[in-house]
Amino acid sequence: MDQVEEIRSKIDLVAFISETVVLKKAGRNFKGLCPFHNEKTPSFMVSPERQIWHCFGCGKGGDAFGFLMEIERIEFGEALRLLAKKTGVVLQSYRPSQSESEKDKLLQINSLASEFFHFLLLNHRAGKKALEYILRRGVSKESLVKFKLGYAPAMWDVLQQFLVNKKGYSLDEVEKAGLIIKSDKKIKSYYDRFRDRLMFPLSDHRGGIVGFAGRVLDPQAKEAKYVNTPETILYHKSELLYPLNITKEEIKKENCAMVVEGELDAISSYQAGLKNVVAIKGSALSEEQSRLLKRFGENLVLALDADVAGDMAARRGIEIADKAGLNLKVLSLEKYKDPDEAAQKDPAYLKQSYQQAESIYDFFLDSSFKRFRGVTSEEKKKIGQEIVPILAKIEDEIVKNHYIKQLSDRLAVNEEAIIIQIEKNEVKIQPTLPVKSKVVEPVKNRRQIFEEYFLALVFQSKEFDQLSDLDNLILEPAYLKIGQQLKNYLTENKKFSTQFFFKYLPAELADAYNKLYLVDFGDLIEDKDWVNKEIQKTKFQLETLWVKEELQKTFRQLQEKKNQPQESPELNQKVLDLTRKLGDLEKRTFGL
Ligand SMILES: [Zn+2]
Image (tube, rainbow, N blue to C red; front, side, top):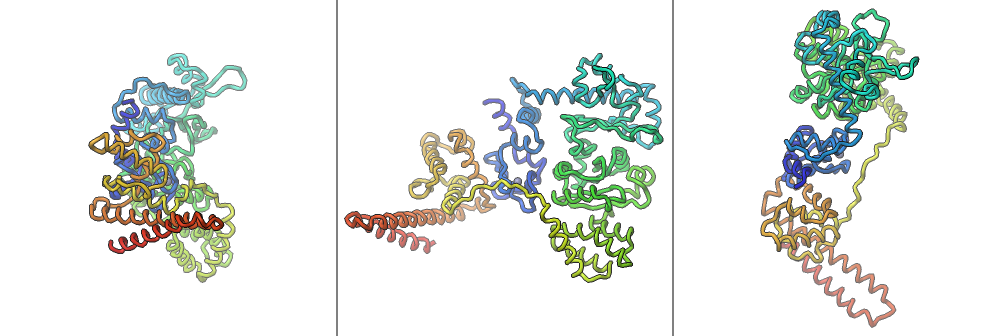
């Protein structure tokens, strides 16, 4: 057995996928909402027998490796390494690709830099001022260690010295990690990007440090409050959620994430007991962040700035999260400027506000009425301009209707007026809606559907006696071959094993075979009587279909041979025979 095979055999695919997707049992299979496209009814299937998954919505499918590659957007090599680690298989001859080794190297560099900064903050006199500052800001010593906070000293090349001279990395590598910057003035001269800053290491959800955020200590300083790692091969701002690697389990447990704006908001909320927190760095959720969050919970409580309703970027982010199928609520902190301040001064209030978070649409309405009153016709117009586009995008008609009514009540105008405005808006937004390209599975004809159903019944129930006469029943070449291979297999082997038979099959039949295990019969597949009846029914249908097809063929031949009557007796006889057969079949079908 090669190592890939060994790893595959050690993974329970249902348990593995359940770490990311909520799966429910559906007969022999498991079903869930596809993590790769947006859907509200499950079309994502996992077959424990075949150890494969397939989505009937977007057409994606594969094994454990394929799932991991797709969900983490990584190459095969990285998936192999992750799964080897998970299953305790020691890889013998594995050579990482160039981009993998490069990523690895940058992760090591970031990790060393983080240790360096952390050491300086906690143990070195250079970090004393920063340590005093952050403790004064209310971050506990325990949190400093947990979140690995650090300090970058006010010097131009101290990190460069450490990583290049002491640890032996090249300037080019350290620059690629985003930690040093090439100087314009002197050729081949670099300086440290982060100087005199409190350092927050930024990890991806698996814990690898992909970048840093550096915050000034002096709030009066002229420099930018935050400096971040630029986009590198590791760090992508739109994908990062801080500190998801630490809070993801809590988010899973609560089925909810509290979303804040900055690193300190996240740490303070965590200290206050709201451990299911992530920071998005800014006010707008990206598509990648929404998709990532959805893997850990279905609900979001947004604790963003109060002016979020007027902020177009934030509204766009809310739309994205809504489209991703996340339920959104908004926490409003009336008394404090941000979650950090609330957590420091009044943790109980923050928790209470979290519990009482209101629906996103109530929030939009309240916020708009607070700003524009809604008494004069001009004010009403302003509220309408802000709220109507939001209502127009609500997908659920009942929810939409509820808020139309609310708005009409509060504005004291009739609902029709609002509905007309919404319709005008829908016309306006429609042309710009992105056209989603969907992988469409080839349309199957009636015969293919019956054939697949029939073989799926036989294989899932292991009623192989039913396959004794395949002629006339199965015509699709791939299915016909699978049937013939099964006959051969059963003469050579006493017992049928899904896995052994899969290996026995030629590779080009693998897909067709796997699909047979994804047909969803629910619990009925366990019911022997039902299975046998269903097999008989499908057999009759296939036979009937065959007779009808043959009849049509013969009729066509008769037409063609109109001018040569000497050929016709045989064909005429054939028509008679087939018609009789059809009659017999119909009689038998009625007997069922
Ligand atoms: Zn899908």
